[in-house]
Length: 356
Image (cartoon, rainbow, N blue to C red; front, side):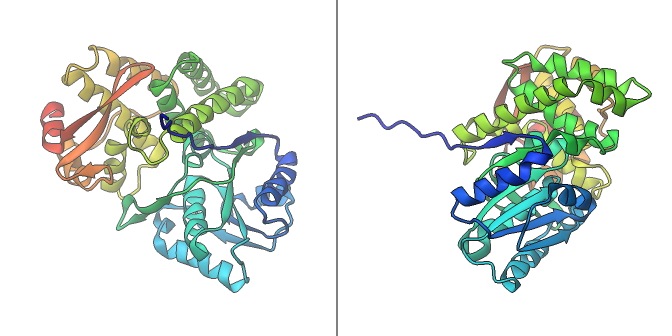
């Protein structure tokens, strides 16, 4: 009998914040953890935790910053769980951006060799990317996500209204991951829809008002991106094949973040990284000339940065230490056109020569 590879179920639930507490209680009950919920949250979203109104055995506020994204913070969360007497039937809920969900997922995955957990992401970047797919990691000496695990949450709850109070800079940060997803898979023709909406918002004086006016379309795009991410991660949870596509722009981005000493945020770095990836694709003859320029024009219209302030040679050392490197080879993701990418094994020297 032919063995067919089973798909890992990755559950994404889109619901109003008012319904989220009930859904979390139900998830905990299904996991055998009813009345045993612990909440870890970014201290900047305390208001959302209060609005959620979820009864928990304990709540812990942490700093959701790159500087705090360390094993020390993971140990702090585990120690807090231990001090509260959390057993192997604990259910940990992470509320915040991607840094907070990463650290919460990592801590839950290693505490007592693994307890159940779920996420309620509060940034666009986390809703469409970071909080979906089971990658939970922390930085090591400012190198991105060098320590971590791949373990799926019970669910990721996407509550659209938590984005309403975000500054537009946070929306553009998440927009990089949103557009990245549609560059990889544009089966729903969502790339042009997303660029059109984000350009309209970016060009408006009242950006929040325009975004609220187009809330239904925005929510639809978020749901579509989350679905693409969940599908790819579910088919390739350990990143042996197509999941590598989700790293589009990220090898460059992590090097940019490292070189900037985290002054350039992840979303901005991914935006710059995708342009570099498109330029590399053109130089190697994978993409037709004009792809990078077209992407750059689209990104700029959405208010996203596109030009890396550093020379390619200055990024080389960080790229060599990227977690995707195997020996002297890095799996670079190259866009062919909107809706199609490939991977190409290259040395960092080949990349710097092509982009010099």
